[in-house]
Image (cartoon, rainbow, N blue to C red; front, side, top):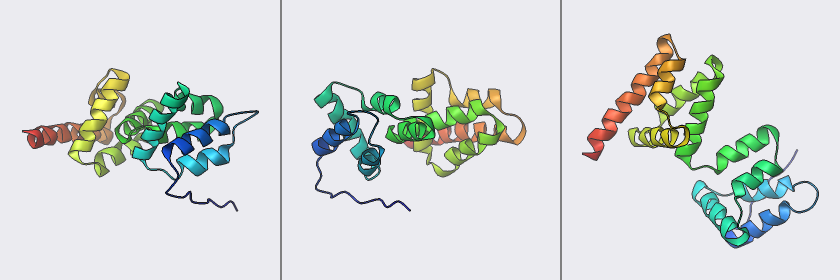
Length: 164
C-alpha cells in the first residue's frame, strides 16, 4: 500500500515550482512528486503555483501537466488545477455531453453550492463554452432532470436578490 508523506508547511511556492519543473525533466514524469506537491496544496496555493510556474519558466503549468500525464489521472489533475467555479463548469459540461449516467453531477452542483457559487459556475460555463448552462441543460435533458434547469434559474434569481 502506498503512503503519502506530508510536505512541510515551510516549503515555499518557488520550491514547489522548481520541484515540479524537475519532475518533468528526463524520460517520463515523476508522478509521485507531482502528487506529493499538488496533493498537499489547497486551491489558492495551486493557483499561486500556476502563476509562479509561468513567471519562472514562461510556460503554462496546466498545459505542461496535460502533456506529461495521461488517462484519467491527467483529466483529474487538469480539473483539480482549475478554480472551483471553472472546475464545476467543466464537470457540468462533461456531464451534459456524456448523457444520462452523468446527470448526477449536475444535481450535485445545484444542490450543494450556494446561490452565489452557482452564479460563479454559470459565469465560468458561459466564459468557457460561450453558451448558457441552463439552456444546455434544457436542451440535453428530459423529464425530472429538466428540474435541474429550474434550480439553476432559481439560484440566478436568488443571486440577483442578494446583490441588490
